[in-house]
Length: 163
Image 1 (cartoon, rainbow, N blue to C red):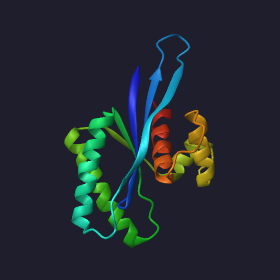
Image 2 (tube, rainbow, N blue to C red):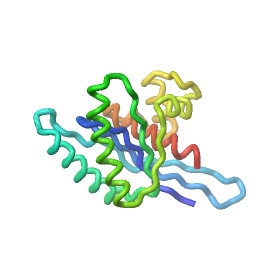
Image 3 (tube, one colour):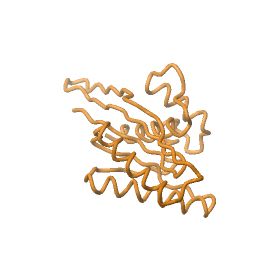
Image 4 (cartoon, rainbow, N blue to C red):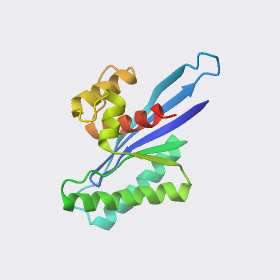
């Protein structure tokens, strides 16, 4: 069995994405292989009107879905720390949900502590510990940059651990 999982770290200025391939062998050992496909970010500029930024996200997310062709999308849930920031991220997240809905793509959501727990066995792990776990799990030579892309890979890995 094989699944392509796309992890998303939502935002307005920067949306991180990370795609992995999850494969379980058919033999009796049930060996699981996880391989990174791609990672990166979608950026919008602060000097643009909100409607234009959301249109860029819509277009770029659709392009990303076409390129990656995910079987499952994993999304980091919103973390409430500053109301003004949370509202704009929620608007960007709404665009993501629209793209997923139009494409009828299944998705799962994880809160930051769930992601930290899945990767480090500690729900209050710091960013560096999570990034090192991403590097280790995907057998990478270095931590993916920028941080938003590494975070998205962490979300994708969290989903893969539940398959």
